[in-house]
Length: 414
Image 1 (spheres, rainbow, N blue to C red):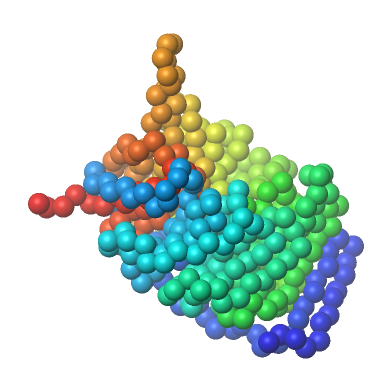
Image 2 (image 1 turned 90 degrees about the vertical axis):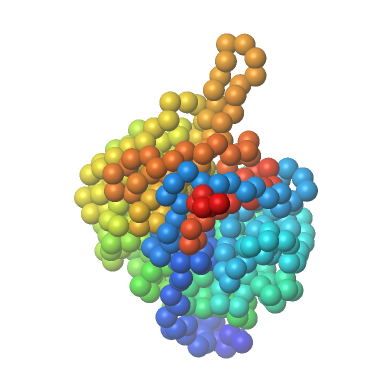
């Protein structure tokens, strides 16, 4: 238990509370091609599964109704032939990956309503964040192992690295500029607080929503985003290493790769992960971007949330490599999933007619990662995509707001 001395350090704009105790120094385990344990798969939020074969030709689609009502589902967490999902009704389910049978169900209660609590798998825990609390479940049976409470009205999903769970919360406020942003580090096995760092509203470390601001962890640094800021904190102490301030709203999760942190404010940005200085900035025609960039093979991908658009940029220089833009109204709400060969994105198109109802086209599409050539495009049930796809081995998973899990696989030889 981390119950010994507590020390708080203050600066003009933030407070760090550190609880002494054993340090978490174990190296993260290697992810296999069949693992997708959290949002954007790894602690860096890259969205890249290098070992997966992926779905490179026109896929077969199997859609399974996971919840009885039309409620949106979280992104998937996948490990050991099991899929973990959270419904908008605050119900967590473990699903057999082969049969799609529900193995257990846990109801977390109404405190999780209206949020997007994407599940995150530690080595022996399943973590779900919601209003005022993070809950750790036993992945084998869904029993509650511990609960970590905090003072706030909204929390990001959890990033688990080296035995520590990192998340961001904001304190309830009627004023968008009056919220107090707090970053937390919690022991995954016990639920004990290791440290927390709070930033005052005047420093800009706030956001109208934390739900999409899932932290990234890499090389001893935890990266958090605020309203228009990117913060680098020491993973052991919570002390601020540097802060970068963008010209516009960030409001999404950071992505770490190639020695850079990739975010987007008014434009696409690469920030040096060590120094906190701008490496490059590329103007993109978007009013708002999706939840986070994704990175693979030296290419960083950005998505326009208001219009089906995908940009592929050189991760070192910011040079535009290729672009996809769909000629329709609609949008995309999350980052793509990547293998070393392909990019996968789910999006919605509205085809408006002079008379009669608007035709809705919910679609999943794949492109060659290097060239941008379309590999396939598949219409899927009108479900409205909210969360990031996941690709494991030769299968792609997409969840939607209609309570369905869509499984896309390569065509069988039969």
